[in-house]
Image 1: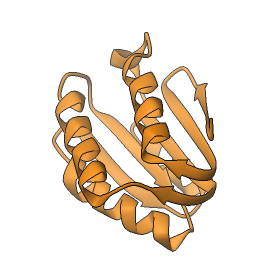
Image 2 (image 1 turned 90 degrees about the horizontal axis):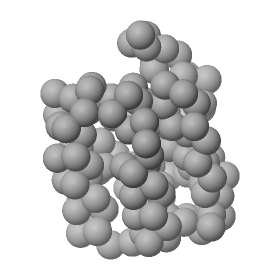
Image 3 (image 1 turned 135 degrees about the horizontal axis):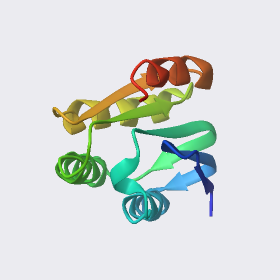
Image 4 (image 1 turned 60 degrees about the vertical axis):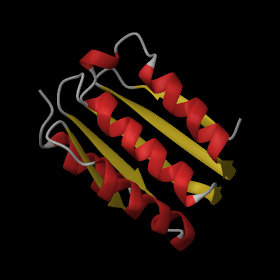
Length: 125
């Protein structure tokens, strides 16, 4: 796998590396959804700083964004911090943040983990 999942109690951290495929993203997403504390989590951090590529079709990424949008409506409000400085990955993540937004899910793109964590900490209970 090209990712690791870290349970941070109030949220989840996904760290990706190398060439990340859509299938791997789907597995990571499913692992997050099936986490026993999903309904208690207040955030997710998806860190792509060590990822070199993100492969999949535009339709696949839009589908995942839409599924996340619907799934997030079944939980408490959650923040999704997406981290990358790779332009190819940023382009995909920008599309994700546009499609996935709703009243319970706020997604933002960051170029470093520290800034992402500052944003998340503003709303932690």
